[in-house]
Image 1 (cartoon, helix red, strand yellow):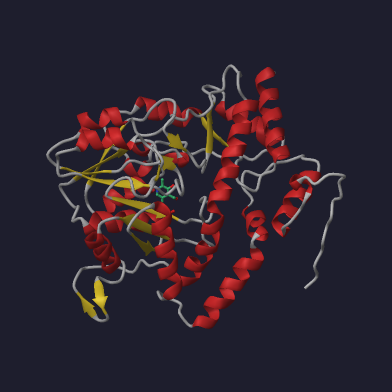
Image 2 (cartoon, protein in one colour):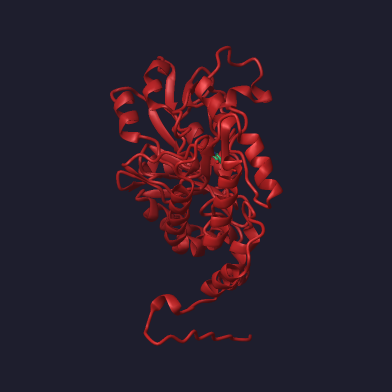
Amino acid sequence: MTSVIIVLASDEYDEADYIRTYHEFLRWEADAAAVTEVPYLDLARGAREIAPELELVARRVLRSGYFIGGPETQRFEDHFADYCGAAQMVGAGNGLDALVLALRAWGVGPGDEVIMPAHTFIATALAVDEVGATPVLVDVEPDTGLMDVGKVEAALTDRTRVVMPVHLYGLPVDMDTLKAIVAGRDIRILEDACQAHGARYRGRRCGALGDAAAFSFYPTKNLGALGDAGGLTTNDAALAERVRMLGNYGSKVKYAHELLGRNSRLDPLQAAILDVKLDLLDGWNARRRELAARYSQGLSGLAGLQLPKVRPYVEPVWHVFPVLAPGQRDSLQAFLLHNGVGTNIHYPTPVHRQPCYAGRWSSGFPVAEAFAASVLSLPLDQTHTDREIDYVIDRVRQFFSA
Ligand SMILES: Cc1ncc(COP(=O)(O)O)c(C=O)c1O
């Protein structure tokens, strides 16, 4: 192995002058280059920064002989539960499965209703359909795209079993207000925290704010595996045990199947990788907040562009940095693409407008529809450099000044 030591000398000690890790060297190198294009997300860039650590743990798993379950999975489950402030974490194959397993463990099924926002990734709704229950949609807030908790009360019926707030974009939902609305009823709160690893609501992390929370470790997430992975956090030991059994063919003891389960587990290889990344997550999230602040400052005051609204009681983790450009979203996206800037749309079609739900809902959800028609996700990942973000800011300003 070749070691390269770079010393930047200065007259006086200044910590900012020092490159102490390979990781910092890559950042310095990237920042020194002229920016002509900005990828929306370059997963290989992030992987390169921690490749030596990941290769080490992959070798460790290879030699351990544990390829399903075992100590690596257990260690990450314990660490992630602690990180979220929850008593338990049960790994699953992906985020959708984590949602499904929780609903199934609570016995939610045909005839039951689950309240959820009209604007989310489709998996939130698919989980409800998969157990045979009925998704009941509520409209979203115009400035955040999050479930409008003020509309939940009107959606409650005798059949409501669960409310599923989605901390979309890494922005926590107003959980205290939601809890006050369902208080005194036999209704569970299942956080869809698939985009909110590390986000805080009134100082507490998502993942321990309701009765249970589902996480996805899909590779693009703030905490992402090298493939599909997911899990459920909860303070309810009985729920955790049931979810674990349901994801393991309904069994606690080998070849004794007490429940009608399935196979959905967190692989030790993915768990070991996630455990390495978990140590870095707070630093990555802080960097995301720094870049979000850079956007907010650089893009303020543009007529025609709305920046994401952050409520004072949340600390977001910016899984996505969504801006609204009503009436101009598509032309802004095309302009940015033409200028080498990758963007994304999360999500272009609300749940009730998806072809798989054709004919299901007679009424529309106008705020969700307007939001989906104007939202654009700008590049924001911990691997982006200040200069890349400044390049995007310049191009966006150029578009609005034309
Ligand atoms: C809000 C939300 N819910 C659920 C999921 C499903 O997670 P997965 O892709 O791991 O099944 C995702 C992630 O893709 C998501 O963003």
